[in-house]
Image (tube, rainbow, N blue to C red; front, side):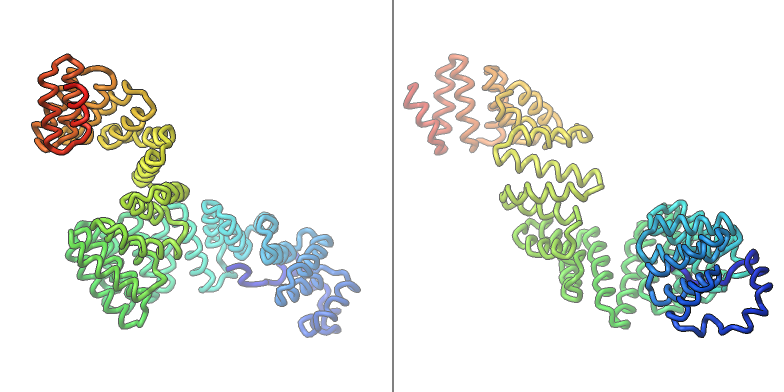
Length: 512
């Protein structure tokens, strides 16, 4: 809120007005004049006060350009005209020129540091410019200079402004203190009590907020109170208590007839049920939330994720595509879409959505997931160099990820660097000894590097582990044949042929 009051000139100008009082009494009040008459009077008299009155009249009409011109005329006559600078700040703010507005309010606070309204509007302008730390300091100055001009409501609004800027700067404990100061001025204000508790929760001091919240829950029909209590219990690992609180929140939201609130609470309940492993119940809650509030991207997104985690990527697509229509700036939604398309082997769509997710994601773990899906998509599209770059980004912080090592090996192998591929495969096997895929590809790299004894060992282990693995019998045959062990090679190929592996039949026909 800006320009809550358009106060008369300050003490420096009051003396001048007193000297002119006798003349003023003989003239009509400027407040009784039309805008045209006031404009004519300002041009005729060319006095500071009249120009300020004209500027204020234009502000009332939201004609900010003419208001600006009027206040500039006043300042040109007397640069110490505080209300001229103040009005000019309001006009510039109305015009959307916040830098110019800030200059004017800065001048008000510099020339008249005791003016509450100067500091207050300076703070509002700094907030609009997203200079949160400076805005908080300006609100603090406004509060300091509140006497005598600021009303009770002005003070509360200033504390609210201060708390808002502190929250923007992640100073949540200080924000809670600011809400507490406002609450001292208005102890029965339940909104202030909730905001203070919310700030304490954001400051990871939820337990400090619980006593007042529980008291507030008993005398308030606001579903947000019960929902916040649930959030605190979740942070403390008390899921059962959280579920009870959310049930109370849902009852209050239903009583209020607020479908958006009901959907939000159902999403929270669904997330808790999913954390408990109750996936089916969670999916039902997300479905109900989406039906109650079709505009809730969170409901559609979480329903899609539930399908995805249950191995139903095609069902997930419709929910996730609806979620992205509602929120096309969520990296999480694009990442989930990429995962669904990846599972469906729709590589072009997976690649596109993985790239989109990286435009918005900030969480490092999620970004690595996106790079991994992107790398796998590029590999499947034949861009092995691009895939390698993506997997290397993941490897920098996840060197113990066996899957990343495997896909790095696959990318290097396709580019003909068998030695590099072998090293990645060996590391993948070390990290995940049960990975059949890593062992199969390690054997292939040994064959490519003509390390036939090593290849033989790998394939012997594979066929022992799975006697139905025809391809490993076939590759074992090549490892043996390359060591001139024809009889053993023939036996291995015969085993693969008996299992229906056509290349083994061809090798038997060619060499035996």
